[in-house]
Amino acid sequence: MNSDFSKMSCAEFQDRMAELIGSGEDLTAHPHLRDCADCRALLADLKTIAEAARQLFPSVEPPDEVWEHIESAIKRGD
Image (cartoon, rainbow, N blue to C red):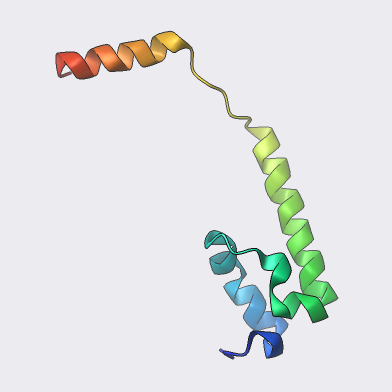
C-alpha cells in the first residue's frame, strides 16, 4: 500500500476506511478525500447509514431499580 496518503488510490483508501473510522480519525481531513469526490460521497453515505442504524435502536437507560438490584447482587456476592 502506498505510504503517501495523498497519492493513495480509491481502492487503497477504501480498503483502509474501516480501520481509519475505527481509529476515531477524522476522515474529512484525510488527504485522499480532498481530491476524490467518489470517496467523499462514499464516506457521506456511510455516515448516513450509520446514523440511520443508530436511530433504529435508540439507547434506553434502564430503570433505577435495575442498578439497585445489580448493586445488591454484587454486595451479596451473587
